Image (cartoon, rainbow, N blue to C red; front, side, top):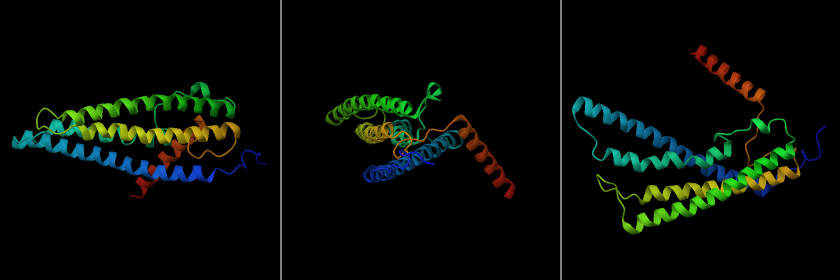
Length: 209
């Protein structure tokens, strides 16, 4: 028998915004993954070129420094959505759901304040680089694109955090309702079962090959 709060349907607007924002987060996360792959490929070319052909990529360090903002920040909102950031949730296991959702919402609200301050400071940092024409040391690449990447990614994280605060407030009122915009918390047993199933699935795929 389901509880009354479990039967409460999620708000349509919340679900729509969650899916729309999730699509943007997934797309940016793919770009971040491609940036990592590209940098690995360029790094191999740099090593092989210097070791075998005695040829180096001109401005290699500058390119690496400026492109690092792509994979360092573009996936931050995606990680917040799926709960992939480092968490210390040992003390939260076993508490009532309403208390759990309240503490999660409080932590996210504190994160919202911090992210808001970071957006302001990083945007000012971008403006200074734009106005001064700041560039890298070797090949004089403009640094404002990489500095603009930071407040842009943080703004997306800000939207995700606001959405999670709304969902946590809903869950505090109806503790047994289905989470929409927040990560689903798993017990130790559920995490272990998922890891076992993943490992067994990987072994079965290897056996088929």
